[in-house]
Structures are given as C-alpha cells and as structure tokens.
Length: 118
Image 1 (cartoon, rainbow, N blue to C red):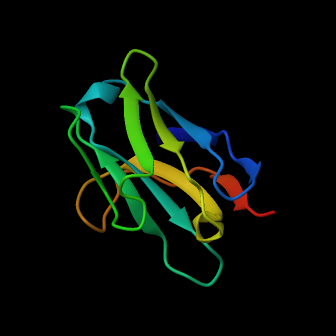
Image 2 (tube, one colour):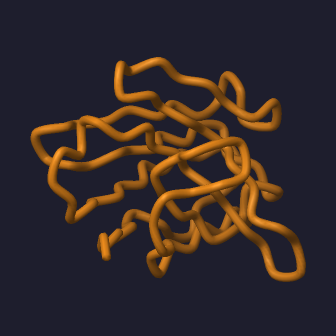
C-alpha cells in the first residue's frame, strides 16, 4: 500500500499563507494525477485542487485564484500553496491520487491540520 505523508499545516492568521507538502512512497509517481482534499468534522471530504500527470491543474471554486497546486516528480511530492487564507479554509488537508471525481487510488494518510484564526 502506498504511504502518503502530508506536512506543512499550522495556525495562520486570515490573509496569511501556508504551503503544504505531500510525499508519496510510490514508484512511477509521475504517472499519477494527484489531488489535495480537505475535511472538517461532520462534513464530507472535498477536493480543492488537482494536478494531472502532465501538469494541468484545476481548482474548486472556493479556492480558485488563492491556492496553487504543483508537483516535483523527482521528489515524489505534491505541494499546495495557499494564499489569502480565510477562516473557512480551516480543515485537515490530505493528498491522494485521483482516479475520478469521487474516487481516489490509495488509502488516506494522516493529513495535516490547517487553522486560520486570529
């Protein structure tokens, strides 16, 4: 099973920035479309950003223009740069390989917590 390790979360004030990282212990990382997801207690996990194996990106409307997803295939890592953070961005963030709109490839990692608050 593929191990996913997310990091980079923390406490940040509204309007601030954070960059999350996700390392995937998998061979041929470059072959996979990758996504960042987030979840708050009591709500479904939602995908906020996706990057294809070719580097094409798309974003949820709620983060469009504020978040940037990128990848480093040599390091088998996907990043999420989060700018102009809002309190509603507070969640646990996860990465995974995207199979379809609602299906991911691997088991979830432990996630990284982001808290946006004064």
